[in-house]
Image (cartoon, rainbow, N blue to C red; front, top):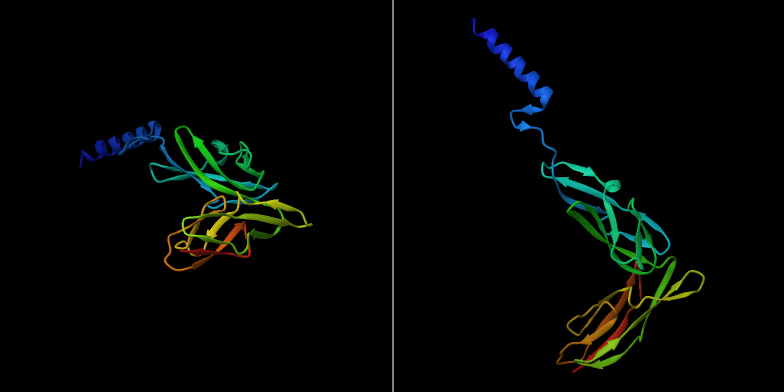
Length: 207
């Protein structure tokens, strides 16, 4: 048993050294490296003139996570649509979408914020019943009515949808393109801004 005390003494000295200098079985303690940044909310939406607090969460190479909202550089892809402060507060400027990015060193993360019209009551799409031949195009417009009776043009900021893309597709600016058809087909065209969806316009596509 005479060896027990030296072994115990060695263990005590080793433990003290580890605690003092940060050395363990895995070596020196190393600060984890930031690998990704997640920007939230995932699908943000803010009314024109209103604000929304964004968050930035960092994930590190050791699997840990940390809130970085106040320690990143915030930027926006379109200040005419939405601005963002140094603390991550987004302000809606005009209807549309903008990419909000949080950056720390060489690592960044982003999400797309949608700015909607404040107090939007309804959306009207026109023309309401157009008819075109295959291969032709039809431009639609979307006019929003806001509380109090004012109107706003949402043609380039609304989200457009065609219920029957085999008859006609529609792009982000409301331009519908008739597809090749063998018989007459119809499709419902709608425009959406925030939670407001327009009454459908019916587009007829002829061979």
